[in-house]
Structure formats: structure tokens, C-alpha cells
Image 1 (cartoon, rainbow, N blue to C red):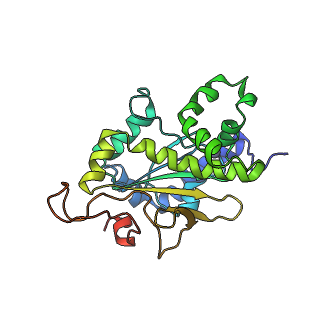
Image 2: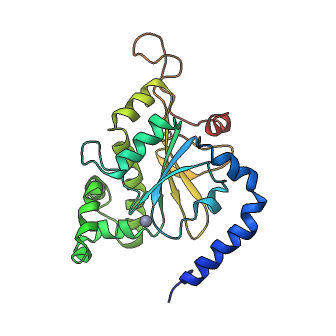
Length: 249
Ligand SMILES: [Zn+2]
């Protein structure tokens, strides 16, 4: 049984509807977007078809720069010259995004593959790709050996978001922007069945529901007032960011 599966005819009808109805209604927006883009946030999430970012985040075209792959994985810097590094570099250097969100999701097939590599014998490319999440597998072995089934899968989804945030910090451009106070990293989980988004809160050391009043930074800029260690008493700014900071106003 397929849920939500559509045929190509439906996709083509959707294109026609967009061009004849939606485009005209938003023609001014698209005219402005033809001049360029200036998103403030890079979203890195899974390729899973159940994650509809425009719907979940209620965003307009031009508001979000997106990187998607199996398992919302970020190969560590130096692990290869792939598209992930190029996308991150462009988002931070060229677009100047000030927030990066790594968002995993419930029922992630890539994380199931990570837990059961024996099932991937016919899919060697996925098996190799998931090696970029081998740290997640080791964390699970060390810290969650008492779990199995759905509980272990849920733990893998959360731990993988944190591992990939660590991988983000291996990029020189990310480390520099964090140090300079111009970048904030967020770790989120999207729950398909509830529509909820959980955000990692380093103060509580757990994922908690995201609300308009509280959306913690997983890794905030290092220094509030000064970018060099020992120059002032600037301390860690890890914690919640304000809605103004998130919107970039
Ligand atoms: Zn997934």
C-alpha cells in the first residue's frame, strides 16, 4: 500500500495549475526573486518525501536555502569534495546565512539502514554514504545498548542530528563564523505523525518541543561581545535565541 504516492500525470497537472493560477497571484514575488535570493537560514534535512518544508515551515520561495540527502548527513570537512560541502560553503560565504538547521525526522529510513547495514548489501552506495554517520552508530553502542526496536531508532535519529552538527563545525567557514558571532546552529527533529518539531536544548541536554517563545540554539556563537579569547569577559552565548535573531531583523 502506498500513502501519498502520485502519478506523473498529477505532477504535470500541478505544474499547469501553478502556472495558470498561483504564479499570477504571486507575480510580484517571483519578479523580485528573479533579481536574486537572500535567505537567512540553511536547512539540512533528509530527502524523505514526507518532509514538505514549505508546508511545515510556512515559508515563501526565497526564504530558505536547502540541502537534502539521505539521513541529513554532513560529511566531515576533508572527507571528499562533494555537493554537501559546496552547498554549505555557498550558503555561508556567498549568501551569508546566519542560521543553519540540521533536521532529522521520525521513521527515517536512512537511520534504519544505519542500524541494520546487513539489509544494505544490494545498495552499496547507501552503505558507503552512511559511513559519514558511523559516529552515530558508535554513540548508540556505547550509550544505548539497552534499547532496541523503535526506541533505538528514535535514539539514532536524535544522536545523528548531534553528530552531524559536530561535523558542521569541522568546516573552517563554519568554525570562523561561529567564533565571530555570525552563525548559530540548530538541531531539530520533525515528527511526521504529530507535526511537532523538537529542538535540541543544550541547557537541558535533550530535545524539547519548539515554540514561538523558545527555540534554543544547539550551538550558538561563542562570544557575545568580543570575538577574541581573553580580550573581554565575553562568555558563551549558548542558549535560546530571540525571534528577532532568528528572523534576522
Ligand atoms: Zn530520513
